[in-house]
Length: 292
Ligand SMILES: Nc1ncnc2c1ncn2[C@@H]1O[C@H](COP(=O)(O)OP(=O)(O)OP(=O)(O)O)[C@@H](O)[C@H]1O
Ligand SMILES: [Mg+2]
Image (cartoon, rainbow, N blue to C red):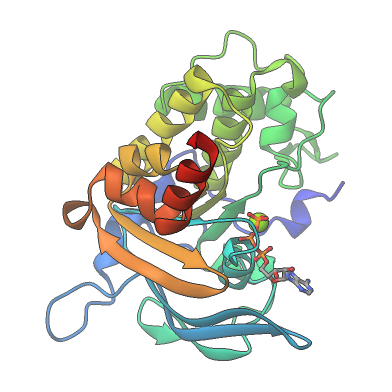
């Protein structure tokens, strides 16, 4: 475990507004404002492609992530969703095209660099230590210390964890409980709350509802909406068009590395989204075949 010395973006107090110096608050996302008066997207990809050796994982991707919006990235297995996330998370670099943050062309050197710029990714397998208390996981790698001996400031970390979760509608009776005792939905929410607390303004969520039942998914979807309403930009990766349609403002569908569809909520119905997601004609053919 690392000490707080390598904390990437620790805020002074427990609100998104108190985010680290590098992180801009969600509400100030209108800055910098281009001359036409329209806020620049938090993240923009222009004609982005990614090649792994001779495998073309992505080609010609144009994507904009705005503050206060949920951008859903849908697609079947192998469509390129994870590759897309990895580029925005600073884990991989694109082979072609441009990545802009707040309207300025940027190169993300590492996930740490992305986090400094306010982009946090919550991966499906959540890097948590199951036996450690919830508060300990919340501050993992960014521990608060106090006094001459720089001992762990347990009291502050405990209280802050409880407060931050409560703010987003999660009332945990005991933040001392091991995180493994929480439900899958609660664990996802803790990871999101943590990203917000440590200065994120863009949240990239990699299939957060994939392994969850209806009730648990509902908890995460409510949380996504709460984050959006507070001005965060959310990128929600999912296989599930129903989940996407419940929270999404903007939908991007990937198919074998290409952008097959890009539309807003007003431009598409749930039926159409489901149909597109399922491969449209392919699904119809399959249905006829199986029902013969
Ligand atoms: N590190 C890598 N090296 C080589 N090829 C890769 C690598 N990562 C991904 N690919 C290939 O790129 C393509 C897109 O993969 P990616 O993991 O982005 O898809 P995905 O949409 O996330 O799929 P899934 O829903 O299964 O997670 C696939 O053909 C995959 O085999
Ligand atoms: Mg994937």
